Length: 555
Image 1 (cartoon, rainbow, N blue to C red):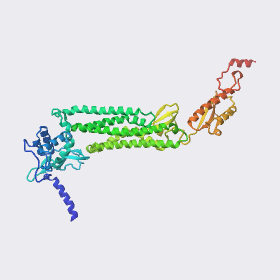
Image 2: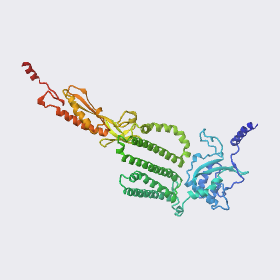
Image 3: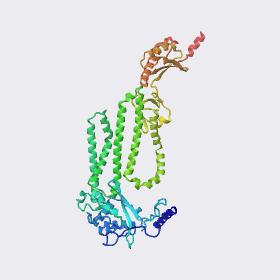
């Protein structure tokens, strides 16, 4: 019987909420004001707010007090009269809240006929409607409308008793400051939109004060940075955080002046608050990322020569992994900043359904537009952990000998042997083959190819070559050196001299010395033109004289 009774009871409750009887809060008696002038429209939530705002705009706060339930305010100890509380609530709604008229039902039962059928409250009668949310002491305070009915009376919509009880505390925070109260009444009159004349004048002054604070911060950092040399850590950190610190000074000063002296009205406040928050978060994020970037740049720049040392593979591994961690920290910091922005600006609650509804399409658009960027970012992480190219590695990229100087999010910065900088996309190092000369062993086999006359005696060149490889300090294994004929044409043959060097830098110098040495040896062995046809080492351009050939035949 109990099992059958529970579902039946739940069904009965749902029927009560959906039948023709009014869905209301039953109270012993109504504690609202009024009684002066034409009555307000309290039949629907929209009628309540419209008539209340109209009465407040006309300054008829005695009449407007009919929209408030004063039951939770102690009349014996309250510091504000009913008229003052009504005036304060109107001021809060006018200055600090943007009323979304679309959410206010124009039906006595507050059924939302515009919402989606998937909404759990669709088609359901309500006795409470939340008009807005205001932050107070770290928590969100709702401005709520309630449908109340006294015994024998008709149900009416009022600002709930708890909302009215919170008005004094909210007004103390969001109401006019002492500075504003001291202004002449003419300046407090409405100019346009919801702005008073003093707000029209104050907004440029706030921007001017923030700009002045940013300028002073810029000059102070520049002067302090001038005390240090360019290669000092403090100088690099100050240079990196200079612009974000100026931005932070601007945003923080803007916020401080607004909160201390000028409390702007609702729509302007709702427009400036997110922009102000975005600037502050962007400035903090910029300072953190700039410091991380500057510290890493200084660490790698100071150890450039050490990282290029062929025996310093451990440091190259370390700094490459550190670079990957830096990029991961950067990405996580940006995600955390975006998440904090969404939570702090209350976007998640105000735009939640819209974001969820459009997340799929928006995600596809972003993925299509940023597929190249996302691929490069993944390539940077792949290169960093797979270590196909490490910071300090010597690589050959598009025929150029370079050192890897920096691995960024989308590009590698390469330093050529003649101190030029090549910016290469990361995709080239993951999708195409490239030569890494220091991946496992920095030693490199260098070769010099010379074109010599076909009549040259190569054996006479092997002796001087052997002497060179045994005496040169950059040849690490003389036994591995070789002299070979690797090609031949009708004009000349190609002789290759090969020797192993300890690393690419030493190898290039040894390569140049070897070419110079063997060209000199070949030139010394080559005979003058009068002693042709032999010995001949340097290639010749040959001509056949047909007149001499006929004389020889006649002889």
